[in-house]
Image (cartoon, rainbow, N blue to C red; front, side, top):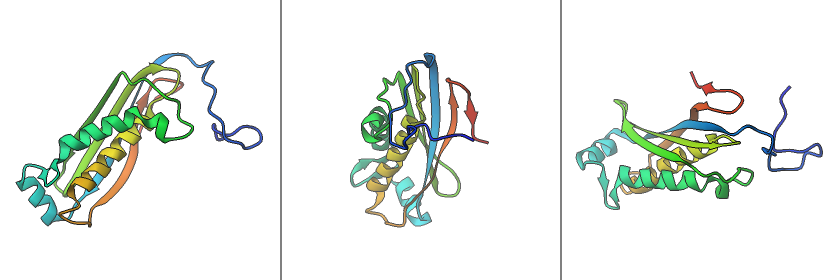
Length: 158
């Protein structure tokens, strides 16, 4: 049975010791979904995704990248990482869902899953903030890890 890596033998929180891990290129992609009511989505699309606060997607992209870079400061037991790359992409589907993805990459001894998840989450929250003047019936859902590479094993969410 697996154990929680952030607890010692006394069940006290610890920062995981990565000193013996191999340095490898590591990458992770996460996604969040933002749902708006049809009327609000159409109004936003009709305004070229501009709100009273400015360019919605561009602002969310910058917020997501900044958040990914600060993950080690936001989540107590995350190692601070030097990101070599971070990309936030935003699109939408036919169901009025805005799809936010964040891919983070580094070369190091620990993965970047939390950075990708944080980047996608904060970008989604920024979309909410930028669009709340249209409606508060905005739902952020299904924040999930899509894939990770590097380290002991790769992962792909199917």
